[in-house]
Image 1 (cartoon, protein in one colour):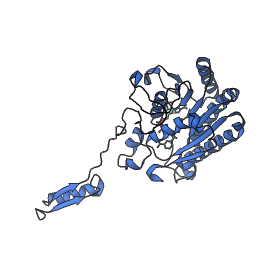
Image 2 (image 1 turned 120 degrees about the vertical axis):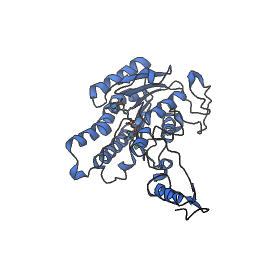
Image 3 (image 1 turned 30 degrees about the vertical axis):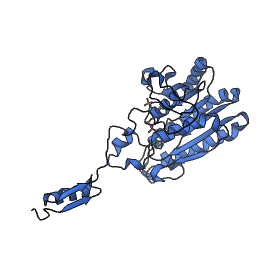
Image 4 (image 1 turned 180 degrees about the horizontal axis):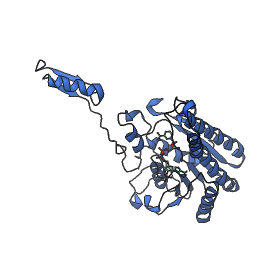
Length: 306
Ligand SMILES: NC(=O)c1ccc[n+]([C@@H]2O[C@H](COP(=O)([O-])OP(=O)(O)OC[C@H]3O[C@@H](n4cnc5c(N)ncnc54)[C@H](OP(=O)(O)O)[C@@H]3O)[C@@H](O)[C@H]2O)c1
């Protein structure tokens, strides 16, 4: 004991595993141990805990900070636009919904369990619906048109992950769940919205795929396949509707910095993950006039995992 008294040890990677053990062992021998500590917070994103994005993207207008929202200087102006956001209060959806509200859009937010009070804003309306049900998808689209008269943007965020098993070991229930969440839900809502946008002769659709749609990883075969099918669906919609100024694009995020992912993987380096704001701000841009000629795009957002 005490053989290292008077020595100083600087240790990187001391926050977990063998690094912690080495730091403790050196300290026990009397060394002064200096560690670099990365702040981790499994409860939620550290940087923007309230689901609001910082005003880093400078665009045309200034938001006055009304309705209790933080000032978001220079955000894109979507005043007068009506958008339908599916998965509106999920890990990504919270940032997306707040970003569209900050841009001035009228927002209808969908999930199986959602209330107006989830986003206290006069331009937000909640619609509870399961998109795995085709009739329910049609009904909710009709409800939006009844209330707002039009739909300018569809942001389809609903989706979900299943993994941990090889294709050989994947059961039918998992396959069905992945197809329901990642393909059928998209098909149902896109099919319901298309006649509205075609009649308007304008509209923007953006769906959220995944990095694995293009770059499959082992042990997530049906998730990757269902997201790849989504990419194909969206690109087909882009081709079929370019004549009527209806665009369709798909974003492919890598692992995102969401509360659920932090809880699932508390030891990860979050700085490599995609922040939901990067995705949210791109969605706002793709609905704006500045992106009217972008359609059929498949956009990777891989963060530090590129
Ligand atoms: N998180 C990531 O690292 C990551 C990476 C790449 C791609 N993605 C994709 O990004 C999208 C958003 O991910 P996320 O992490 O924000 O997911 P999330 O937190 O699980 O949010 C998903 C949302 O969809 C709703 N939802 C689920 N099933 C539904 C259904 N049948 N009908 C209507 N709403 C339904 C959920 O709310 P209710 O439970 O109230 O219905 C929830 O609001 C997904 O498409 C996901 O596959 C995520």
